[in-house]
Image (tube, protein in one colour):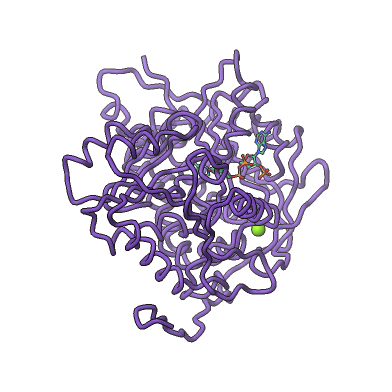
Length: 483
Ligand code: NAP
Ligand code: MG
């Protein structure tokens, strides 16, 4: 090993699982009660790092979704919309506090069910989810300050459908602003990661939130479609793939339903010659390998200015060599398990396409566990702008690299994508950052950092990355009618 490639062997540091409580079987949470699904059907959720079954999850069909929407409507009309806003705020605070108290249990369950590293679920997912509830609790009785001189009304029943990459965090992004604005909720988590949404339902029960204000229905894509197509839902909030987002948009066209769609991405991370190279390399690693690349805003396309390209690539490879791939429960692990076999197959298919397209592939010599779904961090050099791997969302730890000479060239290349979710700019020059932020077609642009989130800051995309914003005051406006 070269001298500057030194890595350290760490002793295993696995997080314990003794403190978590998981049922063997989970029913649907409707109208404040745990309800057996009308189909009597259940499906298994597994730990993608070990392929072991964690629990059985109820499958909700159209009938169950109808029950949940009816419960949400009743709770909206009779209780939640009539309650004083400061009382509603107390419930949202209580949920935040209870989640915070059980943060360690949530983190472990999230890592077991989703395959993400314990470091991420402990330090990012769960604290941020709590913070979203705290933040929106604060707004609940101050809506007239969020929208001065306007009449603010809630919408009614919100149908919310979320993906598997940040299960609890996405539930928090959806539920907290909806409740703060006075709506009631029917939420469907992804079929591979329902557990933390069900644990959240337990907390909601414990908080004493009136029955029916939040309903959690688990199931497959058709459960989501039943929410979308239900005539008594006023608003659809969806986070997931662009393909399903398009289906949803078609399904609700011509109806009264309001919608926000947070969809896919193929975000550009841009390094200029005057950038602090070591920090930039760390930011690139964080931008694409964080959460196994299962991040909608992952910095999956790297653009490096020619003068520093060799240096950046050398340092990137060196840093990749020191990444630990493996047990998500180990606190030393950098890259955990891919969420499902299906997703791993998809990533491997794209890696194969990249090789066939003639790009040069680099993977470090890391050990990959023989059981479970894992993927080595992967770099593609000499990537053509028109190649499939630089155009399509892979949603895994795969980075493409292109070089550029001028600012105009990189703006044109970065914007040459059907997506527009996020971007990163690494440079010492403030004026260049401002120039790029006005010209890059991306909803979020980070300067000299990447993948930073905060409940006060809005998040959302341009073009095929969807529309509407979540987080901050903007996130509230998606759940109110203003006149
Ligand atoms: P997905 O396949 O679109 O699924 C998202 C959710 O929709 C899941 O709960 C899914 O249920 C459900 N669903 C599937 N078909 C449906 C239909 N016809 N009608 C209604 N709901 C349906 O996406 P995913 O694979 O879970 O997540 C990855 C995608 O999410 C990526 O493209 C990523 O970029 C995007 N994402 C975007 C953001 C953002 O903020 N922009 C954030 C995170 C993720 P099942 O799981 O049961 O199929
Ligand atoms: Mg799972």
